Amino acid sequence: MNQLFRHLQGDRAIWALVGILAIFSFMPVYSASTNLVYVVGNGSTLGHLVKHAVLLCMGFAIMFGVHKIPYRYFSGGSLLLFPVVIVLLIVTLAQGTTIGGANASRWIQLPVLGVGFQTSTLASLVLMVYVARYLARRKERQIEFKESLLQFWLPIGGTLLLILPANFSTTALIFMMVLLVAFIGGYPKKHLAFVIAGSIGILAIFVLVVKAFPDAMPNRVATWQSRIENFSNKENAEGYQVEKAKIAIATGGLTGRGPGKSVQKNFLPQSSSDFIFAIIVEEYGVIGAITVLSFYFLLLFRILVAAQKAGTVFGTLLVIGAGLPIVFQAIINMSVATNMIPVTGQTLPLISSGGTSIWMTCFALGIVLSVSSSKEVTEEDLNEESDDPLSILHETIHE
Image (cartoon, rainbow, N blue to C red):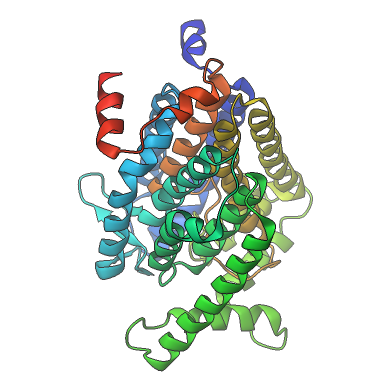
């Protein structure tokens, strides 16, 4: 065991928090998977538990491997992966698939592993690294708005427009994180105001176009509209998922029904993923809910500590861009389950079932751990890196 701990570098508290959340996830996932087994007729509860365990082990392997990579290589890696991400988003948008009987135009299927891959999660991580790279390399000179439109906002906007048709909530989350990192990275505030105003205009045009040509992207804007209306207008009948989630939370009480004793898991769609927090509250009560929430806030605190201790501007922005979305996604998921915001489809990181969410969360945490374990990188090392992708690839291979 000591040999294992010796190879775990970086913030040990983050390792511990991730391990605790992952171990805790087994009971809710095992309990909630009965919905997929007995209602949907998909596999067995033991099969879902084994699959979740395998995906978590793969996620930890990813996190371990990534945290061993010197974080300066992520800067050039974002340039290499950007074209790959764009191609994957186009393929996803063009064909999509259906998973678990639900419309899943945001996924592509991985036949070998038997899981769906949500390309927007990879795109968001690559995009945040790209944002950190751009801002860090321009920290000592004035950013010109026209120049940044082409080199900064055009790649960001193009990526978000490819994600938007199938996944508005992820698009909004990525955009907010980009704005946050840009603000912290010293991007001029007046330019950010122009970008926000322009983005609102582009979104409005997109909605009008989809309304005018509904067959081009069926049901997407209508889905957004119905979710907002059902949330904002209390006289409307509540959505089935939200209603069952509220029942689960209301019957949980202080200590809950007990592990595996949830009733609403048999009626609540996506009980093992999007609405797993409602099952947690029903089985473990308010005490369990507060405990889970506390672990995420502890993770947020350690991420901020890692960002503060990073030795470079790029390291600080990289930790913020890779780490904060994990906690924000958790807060969004719990807010949906408690009916504080409209339904978004965001999973609960490290607890919900699903391969892509686990893998990309572990990848992002690996990046954070890579920064927190590095002590020798300087700003000069980062600035000497070539902008040529072929040179970056050549240097990385030989290193």
